[in-house]
Image (cartoon, rainbow, N blue to C red):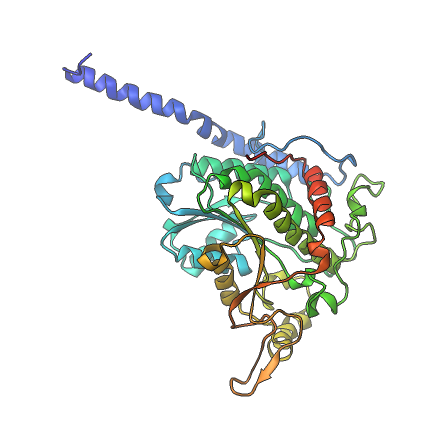
Length: 426
C-alpha cells in the first residue's frame, strides 16, 4: 500500500530495521560474551595436553568451526565502514620486528587498511600506539599460528569483519627461532614449534583464504623467506647447520609418543636447523602455489629476503654477547645488515609496488648474498651482500627449493598434516 500515513511509514521503517538485524544474526551470534568465556577455558585445557594422536588427520579444515574456542578480547566485526574502499592487507606477526615495520609502512599508504594478525592483542595495541599508527587505518585480530584452531578462528573473525569483500593482500611474516632449545617444543597440534608456526600455520592460513583472494582483481600472497634456507648463499650454505628437508621422513612417522618426529628429515632435534628447514618449506610453498594456482586465480605469489635484521626480536633466544655483537658483524664484516625500518620498506614494496606484480619470484636487494660484502672507501660502508641500500631484483633459489618433485611432495604432505583439501578453480 502507499505509505500515506505517518503510522504506515513508521511501520515500514521498523520492518526494514528488523529485517536487517535478522540478516546480521549469523555474523554476530558467535561473538557473545559467554562464547568468549567458553573459549578461554577450552584453549587453556587444550594447551595443557602434551600428547596428540599419531594418525595424520584427513578431515577438510573449515573456516567456521562448530564450537568456537575462547578469546580474551572481542574481535572487530562489520569493518566495512572503517576500511572504506581501501585494499585489505593481512600481516601476521605484526606486533614486532619486520611485521610491525611493514604494518606501519602500509598504514601510511592512503589506499590500504591493515589487519594485524597477532598472538598478543594487547601488545599489538601498545606497539601500534608507540609507532603512531592511525587507529583508523588498522584493526587487530587474534591469531596464534601454533594452533590450527586459532587460525580457523582468525579466518572466521576476519570474514565477519570484512563481510563479502575480497582479501587483497596476505603477508605471511610471523616466525619463531629457537636455537638454544636442547629439546623440541611442540605446538597445540603436536608438531615441532618452528615448523608449526613458520610453515604449517601459514600453509593453513593460505588454504583458508585463497578463495577470498581469488575474488580480488589484484591479489598478492607474500611469504617471507630467508637466505638461511638457500644453500646457494653464504648464510645458507657455509653457516652450519645447513637446511635439509630430506624426503620428509619426519612427517610420515611419529616418535612413539604421539608426536611427529621433531625434524622434517627424521633426524634428531637441532633448533637452528628447524628454523632453516621451515624457511625452505616457506619458499617451496610459494613456488607450488604459483605453479598450481596463479594462472587459474590471478593471485601473485612471491617470497623475499629483506636482508639481515640483526636487532630483530627473532634473535631474542640468542645469548646476550651474540645479540650485541651480531649487528656489528653483519654491518661491518659481511655487509648483510639492514635496519628494521628499511626491511619493512622492502616488504611493503613487494606488497604494493607495480614492479612486484610478477608471480613466483624470490625478491632480494643489493646483491645476491652469495658472497660477503665489499668495502667502499668512498662511502666507508660494506655493501653488496643483500644488506642496506641497492635496488630490488629477482633472485634465484637453491636446487633444494626449486626441486619440483620435492616441492610437490611437501605441498601434499603439508595438506595432510593441516587436514585440508584445496579448492578447484576453473
